[in-house]
Image (cartoon, rainbow, N blue to C red):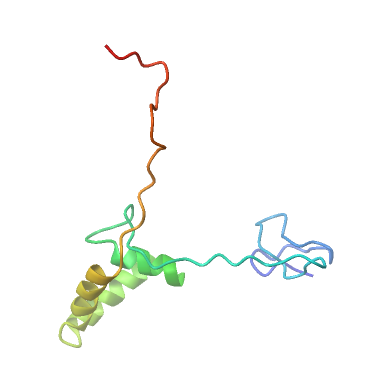
Length: 113
């Protein structure tokens, strides 16, 4: 058996590829597959204007640069359709959640005056 992601030869008993970590599809009895569902959110880190293209590219598994080029082409050619779609996504799609540190004193050695 070979890994579908990196092409490494695998034994039939392997559940994951040791090279890249991709699941092989073979499972032991009683194990369940947990599928991680991603939500469509606007990116906070990889944004140029509002993060719509980066979030949509991450959601559908596409290159973000290609998606940005497609939005520009659709803005120019069918008379603003790409711009209208971008503005609608900007309004409808929520921002990515903030990764905040836990509440409380971040530095226990800090002395308050």
